[in-house]
Image (cartoon, rainbow, N blue to C red; front, side):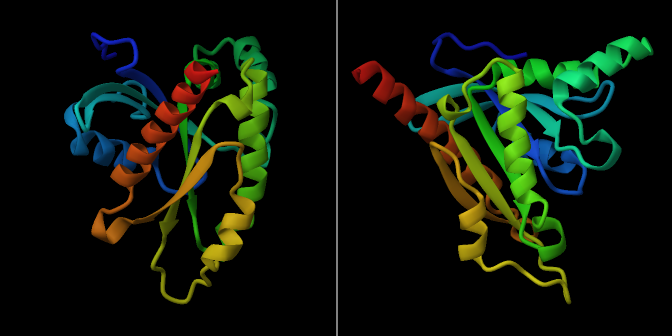
Amino acid sequence: MVNAGSPHARLEVVYYKATVSSPEALLRHVCSLGIDGLVVDDPVPKEGCVLWPVGDVMYALNLFFVWTRCGPWNHAIEDLVAMEAAANHGDTSFAQELAALQRAQIIVLVVEDAVPRFGRTRHFVKMLRADLIAAGRDPDAIPVVFQINHSYQDGVPIMPISDILEVLTWARCDHVEAFAREKRGAKEALDRAIALYEEMRADHEAK
């Protein structure tokens, strides 16, 4: 993956995805917004890297998509890693996700505003916190941006933004609305996540 000359210019970004669509489209879109974006297609496209200019700083971002889990996969991630290893089938998807969470410096949690899907979002926020603890991390030490995708689906009830913000809470976080039809919001969410990271780092250095 990418490496930058300055230790502060290299960032590990995890997209924790609570939407039903494949991560590939968003991953390719984010990589297209920066410079020299690269998507790793093998075995599935959920990892990439991109150079990302913010003001006078060029960040080298490693991107990794972690699937939120429900149904038969609604288990603690450490249990899934153990089950995966015991199965001995060569698949290390959950182990890779756990490793990405161990490295993560900023997280973008992607949700949708449609009522049927948003009902599970509170669960996904709790799952993210549990996954970070399983990865040996302090959840409150990692900034999170909630990227709220507006679905524009005719006939699908849409959550009022005030109700959405009540559910999407974190120690240090922000919220960015995204509109897929206009290809707007993904860049703003990532820019805000980087800004939150720099704010947290400055606060830590000031102590």
